Length: 320
Ligand SMILES: NC(=O)c1ccc[n+]([C@@H]2O[C@H](COP(=O)([O-])OP(=O)(O)OC[C@H]3O[C@@H](n4cnc5c(N)ncnc54)[C@H](OP(=O)(O)O)[C@@H]3O)[C@@H](O)[C@H]2O)c1
Image (cartoon, rainbow, N blue to C red):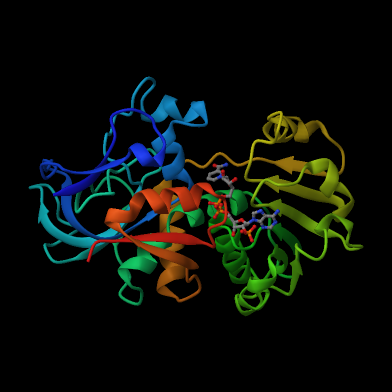
């Protein structure tokens, strides 16, 4: 099969499309012919080994898995002897943030991981795109006590995380104000945003409104700048550590802080987030935003585009 391979942490130009043997199949595993996968921000970390902390999970000095890729949607073509939840021919999808080696024509995945039958109401591309950003979005929202009518401001509504968050909040009937560039204002309104701030025309930190939550989904602001936007017991959330890792530090200090607080999420069980995502996809309540599609042979270009920080939602890799 063809696979995207590297033996050291590297930049996208050093990732090679090469021939590799089909992955061996364990008793608890399914072998999937990959129909669609994505290049996402987690993949960029897995490829480059940056930030360094990621190496604690994927290999300290060199990547444990030479083949990149963290998500997939495809067709089950073989299964191990202990697998009873999938049949050959089933459509499956899954995600693992430490790597699945899914940037390849075939992937072997343990059914003990976050892998489910693909909902029939979505394409392979939509299924693959519904996982990475949505997984993090789930954990950023998980411990908030959201009530219908609460107000939240999301900075960065066209990112994979920000866009999934916007759609999840509609499920909770939360009132969302969101930022994005001019071209996407109408798209985000159609996805349920009450108000969209065009960040090319207006600085969201200067608006004269207050929110129960401010979620910086692109990590471009700070608690200090967003504090005036928060109600007296409002909560600031960021998807980034902050320039001096201040966000997790503030979050640790928050139980001792009166008034406005900071929350920093540490995502853990992907099975748990995927269960939630799966239900919303089935109900048609979450339709992932898809940006560009690249042929597998052009995966280097896809990585550079994602690393540019400009992708809108998700970038798809196709094999056909
Ligand atoms: N904490 C965690 O566990 C975790 C996990 C994954 C990712 N992350 C981090 O979370 C962040 C978001 O990830 P993602 O995958 O959602 O990113 P992404 O999809 O790559 O986000 C890019 C999008 O953000 C928009 N954007 C950039 N700057 C903006 C600004 N100042 N205002 C409004 N929109 C802006 C871009 O639009 P324009 O092109 O129009 O600017 C683009 O559509 C990244 O910084 C990533 O490193 C954290």
